[in-house]
Length: 223
Image (cartoon, rainbow, N blue to C red; front, side):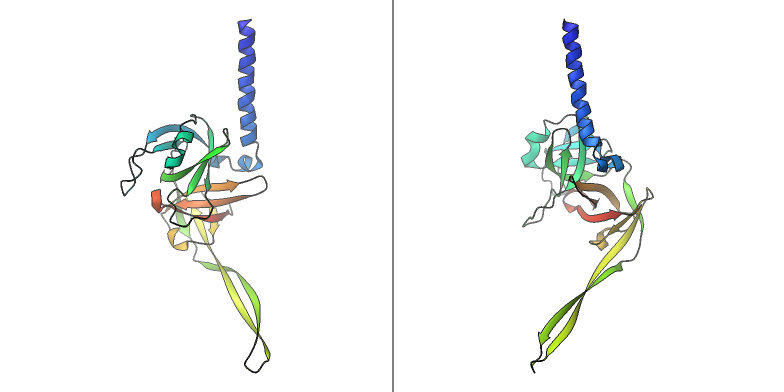
């Protein structure tokens, strides 16, 4: 009888993990970009940033070798996570009045919860920009502006808005395009690729820098 219950319990556990993997891996985005899905490997206490702050905060190491310090408010939540949990990195996009130090979130696909984090270490084999294009004009928007001159005559003025891009070539052979923060994404800069994903869309971003000095730019993957 014990053997029978043991088998039933084992079957239920297997079904649970299969359902989790199906939910995560079965998403078309993660099928196409599995390299952006990582696993939790270990926890460790943060030694403090360049200003000596956040010492002792719980940090996590991911299967790609990157390390992320969690926000003080999220310590209890992340402490309940387990090694092997499927995680992904997303950018925080909500409005913030002051400089944001924990600019990203680690989303736990198995627990359907996320914590605010700060990147403190890039991957063991980091992605790096090996070359860039010059900043170039991608598009021009022409906006007609009508006004009356001092004689009461209707006049037309065209206002031009220029949209700029910059191409980035990484050491893994991929090519990315950004439309902001051009001066921070330069050759020999380490970058980390993340994505904000929902049911109907996704947006890539590239992270450069680390700790409170890190920043990110929305990016398009060309190849």
